[in-house]
Image (cartoon, rainbow, N blue to C red):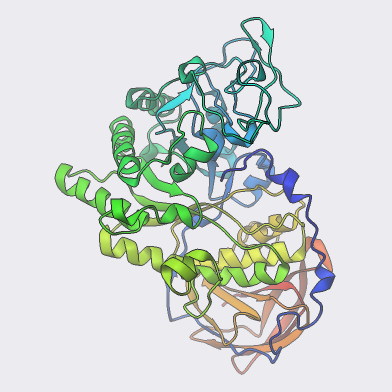
Length: 536
């Protein structure tokens, strides 16, 4: 993502009142959809790694409470991270500020080491971003790429930090000249950076192995090949002023992935980790007539054929949903899978010529060009910043789709506070009763005749064979519907857990609902998520 530290600030600036929706705001009939669950059909495992959250500000107790699947050291700030001086450069996200401002030399790799240690209690898998960009930050001392003393007036300056360079207190600019809004270019990259090398990154992985063990022995399990390389010419324009071609991104990925595998042959690698829409495409004229993602898979497969080593274990991309309005937010989850839903993006309209079908599309690419590769979305967000009930149920819809569609890995970008609505989205799947009980780990068939109104997801849990069914009402109106149950050993009643606008600081344990003639009938409150637990 190209905005790391300031995301939450900007998200506070736009307020979209939910009252504008009102009943039937979707413009669709609220006639009760038909819901069917069959425990014998469509049985597939659900990866615990789909329940990942970025580590920046993630509350450690909350992470342990939900047994967060994975935590990520990543984002724009990781692209230029130099583990030896434990500091990076924020690029265009924040005035091209480099260094940590430490008064004495920090311990090498201290910040990601702390991340891994912090979330050990949650049994979280760690995802570490390995820089593959040509330069990384030079020093832990504060610096910036465009001081006004050297580059002149700029359209915006850092109001908080003023590094001292050659004894002079500097004001740092944003690289856009005040006169003519001209983009400035760094005249001396090596003043604040050093060349990146595979030896530097291999040594870092060796450090992580020495501290935490190899991936196979419980150490750092995942490594990511940088962050959104197609966006380097924007975010990291001082050191990479031109957009790298995908042949270049592939070459760099291969070199640095090989270095990771040399240091830890049991580590799993994700790539290319590019940004939403444009980052998946590249320039087909430079890519054997293929989209960037297809070309990347093709080239990594060719490398394995030639060298007999698999470098990339997960095909990984980023995805940001449309959160412009609550209606768009709830509908946009359908872009992950629905062959009948077109989200209206320029990629769907001009390039794909039809619905996104993101997960099936990426799986098709994998099947065609590099079978056996797993699928990851290591950065995504459906958070509008409103801290609303719609944020919560939209995130639950996403997590339900990830499990049903057999995504292998996912990591949400903006960590919620433990009392935020989206925190309850994760609790619904990972600790719905506060006693550690979770949504099942084997997905089973759950079908809604109108998933735009009521979404339904179901799973069976290893250990006690309990079947969990999650129904999400995406409308402002209550809907009474029946769930038809097949191939289940049924008790007289199901336990019920509800998250709704009526109680946004807890998941309510409601009265049991009777199961009659293999059918469960319930009235789902407007904008709610209801979990049924059927204990055979």
